[in-house]
Amino acid sequence: MNTKTNSEKEIKAFMSGLKRRNPGEKEFHQAVHEVVETLLPFTAEHTKYRDGYILERMTEPDRIITFRVTWEDDAGQIHADRAWRVQFNNAIGPYKGGLRFHPTVTQSVLKFLGFEQVLKNSLTGLPMGGAKGGSNFNPKGRSDREIMRFCQSMMIELHRHIGEDVDVPAGDINVGAREISYLFGTYKRLENRFAGILTGKGLAFGGSLVRKEATGYGAVYFMQNMLNHANDEVKGKTALVSGSGNVALYCMEKLLHLGAKVLTASDSSGFIHDPKGIDREKLDWLIDLKENRRGRISEYAEKFGCEFHEGKTPWGVKADLAFPCATQNELHEVDAQALVKNGCIAIAEGANMPSTAEAIEVFLQNDVLFGPAKAANAGGVAVSGLEQSQNQLRISWSREEVDDRLKKIMENIHSKCVQYGTREGKPVDYKSGANIAGFVKVADAMLAYGVV
Image 1 (cartoon, helix red, strand yellow):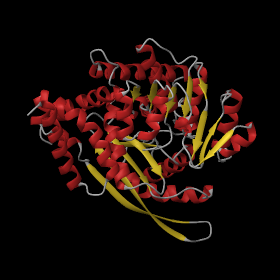
Image 2 (cartoon, rainbow, N blue to C red):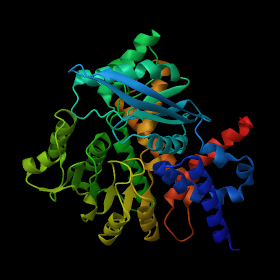
Image 3 (cartoon, one colour):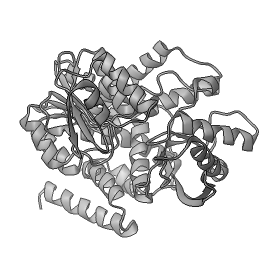
Image 4 (tube, rainbow, N blue to C red):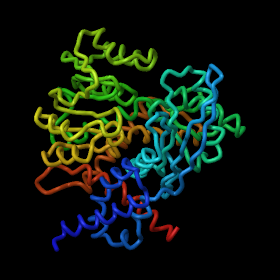
């Protein structure tokens, strides 16, 4: 039996067991499969990890906390939503990962995000374990006071499970500065102490400069590193960006800083295509639309006289670079084929697992540079880690210092991916490189602890 066939059988057997233990959790299955198809062949060559049962242990969360969040709306109606905290692995540091409020949040989604977070946090080089949490609460259309009451109720239960040396949540989809502020204020009152137990806080009470921009900036820095390694650059390139939240908006901002031309933005209603480019003035207007007025992306098309494509994604537009920055599984095989056909040379994932397995395979088969989320979007959690450091030291670094540290972290992540993903005569396999580099640090720590 050849090595490839044997490896495929091992992957199938591993996934069969995982699916049996975690029935119906398709997002979690997808995330684990993408990793183990790289790591099982690696552990076959490095038997200490196989003998230590590391992959099996690493794909089982340390614990999952599930609880009810009861709150009252402005009309006096009582609601009961469900919330979770998935504390996945703390082998290299306190649990770290965001909170997400969205009706699509399930245990499967949070397990996939928490598992990815373990490897992503490892890649940053900072002492952070992996976790994720959130609720199926839908904040859309809710007043500030309703969101405040929900956050306060959630923290009443969550506070007993977190701490600066235990678990440090952050924001994610629909959890921004407003929600973090409500959560932190409640924690402070419940615990009667001021500690860095959340990141993404306001600058007035322990937040870090560049935190809001960090994930978007980091994705562009990673793209810059990939292109520089291939003797190319971002300057002069056209770029597609999906989404219009923090990640997308500040990805666009950094692309403009580096001399690229941004052609698209999107939200759940569709995408806009601006052939003239989203320049600084237009981006400022878009940031105000999304962060302050909470409007729809179609308003951009009306304001600036460009095309709005209802219910569609931007991947059919011709461009050099692509940045999926919206949500998981937004970029499918047919989209990847369209990008390749239109001459796209590189992808950097700003969202978590935005490309399907089939789409990734298309990129790799066509030698398109592919920066996977656990590497390319690690900038957000990296600056969260820097916020933790500032809180522990009771200091605040300048914007330039935080940005310089972020650039260096993204350079180091890129170097680790190159170390483990270099292939003879072919572009770097960043997917394999990121998986192996993130795995090794956590696995070595787990082995050192013994059987626990």
